[in-house]
Amino acid sequence: MERVFIKENFIRLDSALKLASAVGTGGHAKIVIQNGEVAVNGEICLMRGKKLYNGDVFTFEGQNFVIENEN
Image (cartoon, rainbow, N blue to C red; front, side, top):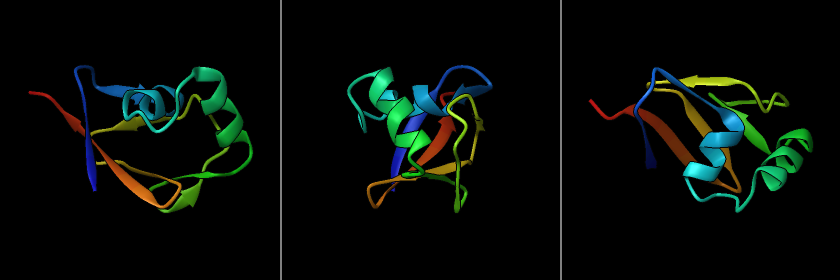
């Protein structure tokens, strides 16, 4: 599982995909989310603005990413 570190209390799903380098652009993130290719905490998520908090896990193309606060 790959760790994605954030400085704020939350990060939007589309931004998390970019930060994790799972996608190259925000447009690509929007497409894969709307196509149902991303799961959050085990459930498909179609909301690109979904807020992810410390401990949340998102999955894309078989790879798991966990959100962790930097502090």
